[in-house]
Amino acid sequence: MDDRARFEEFARLATEQRNPRTMDLDTLDVPELLARINAEDRMVPEAVARELPYIATAVDYVVASFHAGGRLIHVGAGTSGRLGVLDASECPPTFGSDPEQVVGVIAGGYAAVVRAVEGAEDRREEGAKAMDDLAVSPADTVVGIAASRRTPYVVAAIERARERGARTVYVTCTPREEFTLPVDVAICPVVGPEVLMGSTRMKAGTAQKLVLNMISTAAFVRSGKAYENMMVDLKASSQKLVERSRRTVMSVTGVEYDAAAKAIEAAGRHVKTAIVMLKRGCGRDEAERLLRQTNGFVRRAIETAAHDGSAS
Image (cartoon, rainbow, N blue to C red; front, top):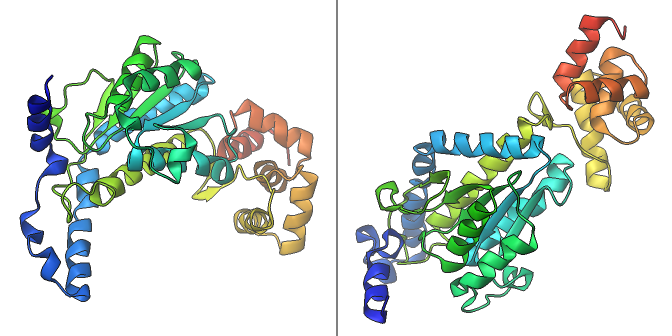
């Protein structure tokens, strides 16, 4: 493809169009400028809502990967890459997950998280190599993130992930009818032109973050990391998590602060185990056995204990 053809392709991208509702952006005072940005931002959740069936498919893939001992791997460049790294980095403290279970890959390496690495997104060979370096396998689900769909680094990474047998997902703000890459599922929240032409860190970035949050959160919930609407696979490794752990145990079981603290210590600082111990009146070994038996689902562990009479 020559330079002229690349330019014409670029000019046609949905993410590179001018927004007719913000043509006077440079004339607005601050309150009106903010109101205009806010009005555009309100379009994002609806765009994501239209993609829920496709997001659900992606969640099913990730749950299957987790059950098979595989990983969720995000790969992107620029804003998209940073969002993937952010989602991956937040999973261990939120869900008590292994840091290698959700991985964020960004063009230019981790230095690009805090400072742009110019040209990194165009290096196809590095995108493919990143998948080889991670030894991507059929147990993994790889999520490509690119607002414009065309980022060479991301496209090459997804192509190599498919070659290696992984399930592949693509999150883009390109209309579905214009998306032609071979993937297992595409998620296409079309948010329209940005307030500032081409600034995809705005609406497109917001949409991508919502989608990534949905995928990882739903996958972990479906993997037994929540009880009711609380995070229960916490490990009390910081003062904030210590207090959150105690509050969680108190909320679920109805015990007072000191009793919750004592139960968590007796459970090896593992909230799930403490909850099962208190709810069923059993010891740590029995609670751990029940959690293993039910693949880590607290509700099932409690109900199994009640059903089989293994605890009072």
